[in-house]
Image (tube, rainbow, N blue to C red; front, side, top):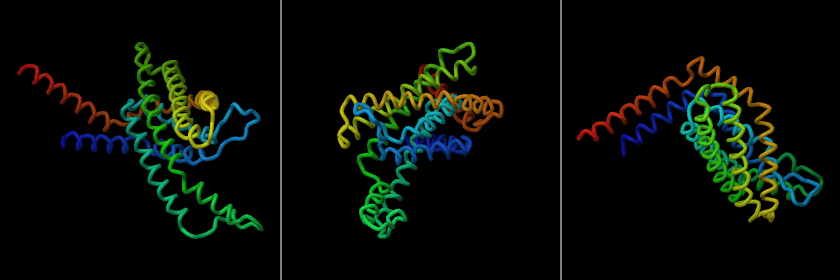
Length: 261
């Protein structure tokens, strides 16, 4: 058990060091931003449809997960997703502590209602436990679904697994499924129980959000494809792959040794 934990720690450290910093930074920021923006609902002219502002950035998290899954594999992408959630929780804690510090937000300096505005801003940036809990559960589950669906679809393209058709198909399908799962889980945990959304609104929000986020994925997936090609050409992640392959070889040797006993 101790050796497994040490190996896992080294694998995770190598992954963080080998994934290019801009991808990690944008990924973590998108996770933090979409959880913060999920606090604001969008006013719509129809009562059966409900959306929150998290949809404007959540697609970016899935785009970066697709890139990491394609190059490093679904396990690596899931590890990075959990890391992003952990960082998000730390900064949510910092925001909560900041909301407890006596003081006034700039927007509360108005002629009337300033105290209410200040309290509202503290509550928004300080976060609500059920919004944070719901978004955390939803993202972790949807990340696992997205990453392993993406990798599974990639297995079907045996002739040209690194081609554009393979990348776009695995990205579009996994994003659609993952985004629907993310939206639906959050809606059922938070919006249905605490915001009073009906089940119809939860479903329509999940479907509409999925379509909106999928459109963004389609628009920007060409960038993801080019990034993956560049990474492969430049041997990005060589140290990580060497370690993972070495572990796999050691495991194979151990299995053979057990069989021959």
